[in-house]
Image (cartoon, rainbow, N blue to C red; front, side, top):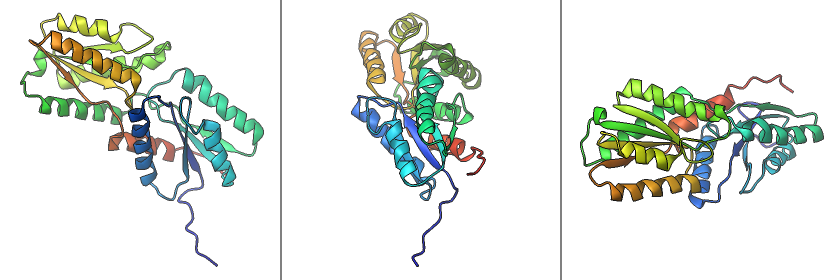
Length: 262
């Protein structure tokens, strides 16, 4: 009889991405998934997208069901709550549960403002500062945090809270928060305002997991305004992406889910 290595725990993970038309954003998500899988190669892990890419959530779950897996963690690879996490993902899971009532599906909520996220934001800021050829102190710097933006206030609150935390801990002269879409204050207007202040450096921190059409649009605006304001520095920090600490955070959230085992 062939020896078969047993799974490390009797549950599988269905990771859920938003999906993007942008190929770079898609490839970043795939790199994230490769790192997530490497955390435990024996774990069965599939991924699906809410929109714009294949496979769908239903198709990803179908792959797990075909392997006779009963215990599934639905893990949204998103930062904040919103319509997708409150309605769309639970709705898709509900459809599958109706068809396969024997499944034990546990839904992990969005990451929220986890300590690992703050850790990565600090790392992204420090890396941007170190790469700059212009030496300005943090007292001369306005930190501008850019969230994706949502019609749901809860989805925007993490970026606002992060702004307050980083101002206190990193001693910036000032911090401000804006959004790329859906809600005020919007990025372009806020950057215009920031450039009108006394601060010599505007350090932009994108509060995004992955790149995409929206984030590239924000960067394009920043580059345009830098050309028009050469007396000041607009410094761009990297978004969160598949930083190891971010992958670890999502992995730990899935691995800590408690099941009534089937």
